[in-house]
Length: 142
Ligand SMILES: [Zn+2]
Image 1 (cartoon, rainbow, N blue to C red):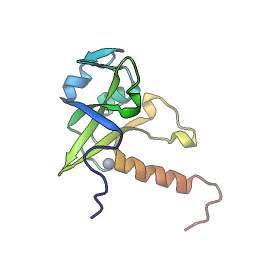
Image 2: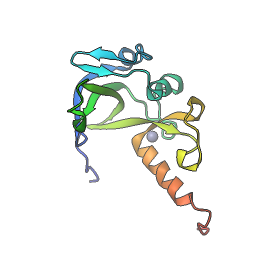
Image 3: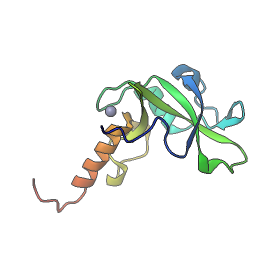
Image 4: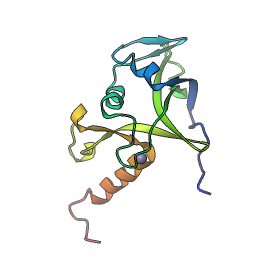
């Protein structure tokens, strides 16, 4: 019940599995080559995981590895760009981790490290729903 999603996200191709140190030791490299793939290791997402850690700020779930992945629509990209996604394994399910804006971007939150935290995708979706619900000044009290 409630297991609508397979192990693989539609449109995403997994190229390899890496430990967290294997990936984050190379933070800051703009064009790091992994076999046939090129990864920009200088993104705020990796920085957030390094500084804020690998636990979801909301539910405490801990991520344990990275998957090197590419979106299928990137297939025409001549540089073979890919990216690392941080995951936890819960039973037979993979839970993606995201860089969350503590003060939501939709409500004027800044895109700076001070405003970033590590959060698992399910919690992030729940949080976004909350932001939407409380986003209007005219929301009547429950
Ligand atoms: Zn969570």
